[in-house]
Image 1 (cartoon, helix red, strand yellow):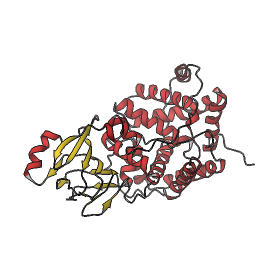
Image 2 (cartoon, chains in turn cyan, blue):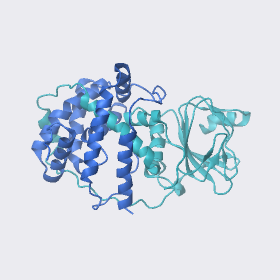
Image 3 (cartoon, each protein chain N blue to C red):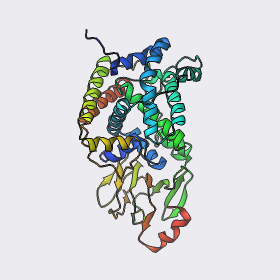
Image 4 (tube, rainbow over the protein chains, first blue to last red):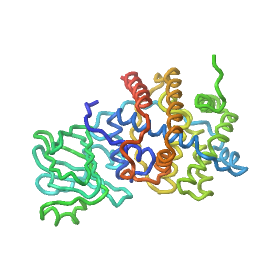
Length: 216
Length: 183
């Protein structure tokens, strides 16, 4: 595993554990947790809180036939055996992301955004979009601020912005006050998974005109 | 040998193991009587109508039976594991959405649960439970509302006042052991 320096916030992990994040945010969180055992353990700690709330909660009487009805649902079947899973074949994308892309990085259907930058929007039930971004080494992502929270998870390569360096597995949680200009490190292209809960605000005219076209 | 309280965490873990190993219907009945009314109450507080909450609680308990072999007491107590099944059911039924899940850690037949790990995790879960009960009423209500799905991540405070450090460290140790065994 890579050394990961930038992690999820407690409020995002708690909301993921509580099940109140949107599908787009959940995808980015689940992908980061797949790469980061520290956040996996923190998420499990929040699940423990959920378990205690469930256990301490006031009860609501079940119907009289509920147990028999449940046994009918089970239908006399034995519990499923625990299937040993093998180590995942080395890939750029963790499995939750591969589910949405339809495979690893070579399965991505990129669309060009200009300047060598490419993206693919992933289908979710959300109004907020989640997308993969491909930024050639040394290139910049168009200068932007945002109205909501923006999550950017690095899957390949690295980028830098005003705040720090972000390498594979690192996640940047940016709020509306951050006006940043991420630049991919020279060398291998930087591939990121990014989502916002509000549309981005671009500061120059051209990307702003392209915005409705590319749904960014 | 200390006696295990019949309604404590370790006892529930043993009932789930009995379902896994012996398809023990009596064990399932005891789990059902304790957890099904709590799942139903939890779903109603999360905004489900009573009839849907009843159906979902039955389906959650059927999943507990089917997936009994996936329960790992060194990483989660029984109530934690059942909570995650109930939460996923709520997202699936009420919001009609998928919930992307992290990929499973690789595990094989040699990755047996470490009994001492499981016991220490239960003690930590118990300690956390007491800490939640000891929180000021207002704060406890806020955490409950978060888990009923009433609050967005932006409405949640970064500082919850929950002492999660030790339980996180225990789970982290269990994950490290699992990774090590699979090397």
